[in-house]
Length: 564
Ligand SMILES: [Zn+2]
Image 1 (cartoon, rainbow, N blue to C red):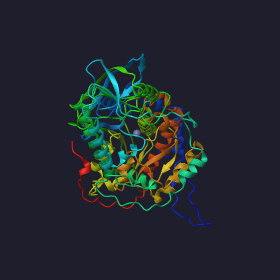
Image 2: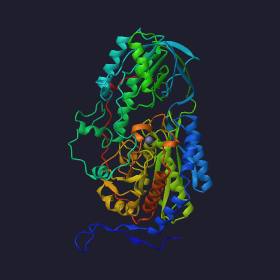
Image 3: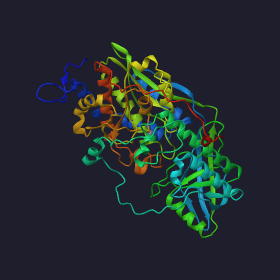
Image 4: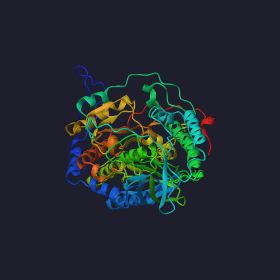
């Protein structure tokens, strides 16, 4: 039933009469029904269970990713959503699946080793035994050189020259030992009111450096470092990461050719047995595959390092079975729709990335977001609220490797991010809402520099103030799929979320599992997501946009790019 009760939410009033902006209509009956469905009949933790315990982890290109995508399609079919499907976006690369891992220190005494092999590194030939050797690649001082590609290439070149002929048959300890001072802050937090006030404040203007192809280093001024992550066009940023990967390819080929048995690493973050694990090799077909690279608990790494450093021979027994599969290189997203009414050609999108890293089950990054957008779609479908525009859900693939799923989708459907040539649907997208900052509840929205949407979102958030969502910031945020939309001038947004233990513990770690997700937070987020989508699908106009970005200058090649 079409909601009868449409009221005026408080617009911003200046003086006695004239509204500063047109007042935004908020449908409180629809919000009431959305909240009731989201809080009384929630299925969001059920979605999470299937995406994590059953089908996690969901590394891009892996069979588990495909199973999670198939499960999502099958589940939405049961809801009667229109045409849930896998939509390919071109070639991703190779899959990598861990089938077995066991590691033990067997001399000078016994210690079982806990860790996680890094993605796209090789397995061992059964169980192998080898002695450790220290060969530190990055010190605390040179670690930042990873973001200066000329320095990085030189550093790796020098390291290879120093260690050529010395590492064969050994297990290499490649990281320095890190001290683990006692923790002084809580591992999990919610934003206090003062923190939200800080977020709401506009950032001080800083003159940014002009960015040109290729980006080979971060700006020297720390205040400008976010230039790499946010205002920089996403295609340039992605190009930077690709160039960095090519430089690491040279290191991987060296480790393989030298006959290194394995490499052990320890992240710069975490303690208490935490293991952070991303990739060592490249997902690109044909890239050199390094020997097994295993991230281990920092405390255990430190013990191995101290013993080796004191010249006490350390022997490790290691077995890694990892399957690299190049037979299914296609990348794909999951897409589904609720068709609109009288403006069915116009689209509102909601999305989250479905792929994950592999040390845990990818619960907070980003099964949580995927469960929220699925639940929001379920709520809208079950309630049958009439909506003028078509609502389209997307679960993106290969976000973790550089937003591939969403970038290619946007290029195919909306606009070429380099030439800025637009397609017809570019003019028909009302807005895109993304959720991918952990499992914390929604506290507000990053406006991505778009002042025109502030009064609209302020009105939409008002019925959720008592659930903790009231903050708007003009600031940008990056690192996830709304950037693909924002970078071609489409109104794409990411919500502000409570941090909980996302950056301290779960982000890309072995603790990124179901138990670190809070049901109440996901229920709140599902209701807000459903309400934002509903209002974007029913308001008279599309969301206001920033002017179109200019096309990027043509690409230039440099020596720093390296070649494999
Ligand atoms: Zn993520």
